[in-house]
Image 1 (spheres, rainbow, N blue to C red):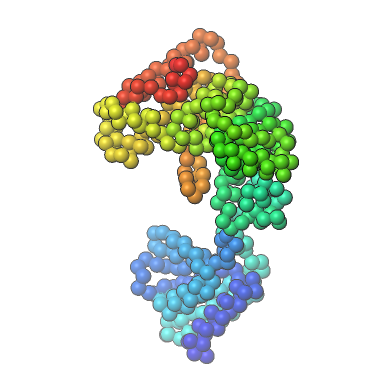
Image 2: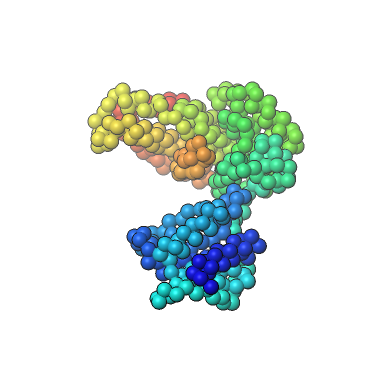
Length: 400
């Protein structure tokens, strides 16, 4: 059998193993080609967004590079590499191992050996996750065009489904830090189309078995009407959406207040509502930090970071950190344990800062509490002076 016939037989066997699901993996080794530092290529089958692909791991001397290809393109690439420097190729399938090798004397041989594995590995691209929000039998996910009637997540809704679950995972961990039964009423300020509001209601009722009331507050009447229709179709009897603004909503009896992507000082309005309600948990994901940025630009105070803030992009980032840092300090002043961390949101806003306030359960002596609050106020005062800030909107709302 000629060299070309051996190679053709090898590629044909690889193709068959992919077709009958017996493919385990493939390796290309003993590289003598021209690509600098390339040592080996490992190939495995993956499924990415319901598409069968071949994942190529290119192993170089100091790094690995992974690229995914559709099977026909991948097979063409394997053939090309067999003719461009790789002296040995090994196909591992659950039926047999097949080795194509060019010996030192230039002779090419094709030999078989007993299969190393009797079970094909999972083709899942990502490690399977135990999602808190399951896609099956969820009317609201169907109505919001996340899944079909059988519970299959639509291809164009994969990112939104992951975002929903990521959000619930975060809230789940925070809620677990509270005493049992704390969450009786939730307000989601600026709820929009309600993806996350519905998911939180589902989690509270279906997973935690709570009877919490959940309210979505949204300015756009068409969104309110749509969400109330979906809630009714889903038989979510304690979920309601109301038209209004953050400033106008009466949040006095709210235990968990949420505001995601409230623009500029609207985030401060939400935090203010949560503090005045003595909410056990306040969760905000701010966006647009215009008020503090304008103050820094106007007063132009010279400080140790002036060399950075003379550049617009750095000034924007500094303004975000200062705005949210003072928000965290104000929450601390009012007895909240604060957390500030980054979380993945969605394709349009891939990363956001989450500011969280958990109401402290401890009781402190009045003298110690007064001293603690005074120290926090001094930090706020010093921070404003350092950056040339006249006032912070949340500070003014709370009359500090």
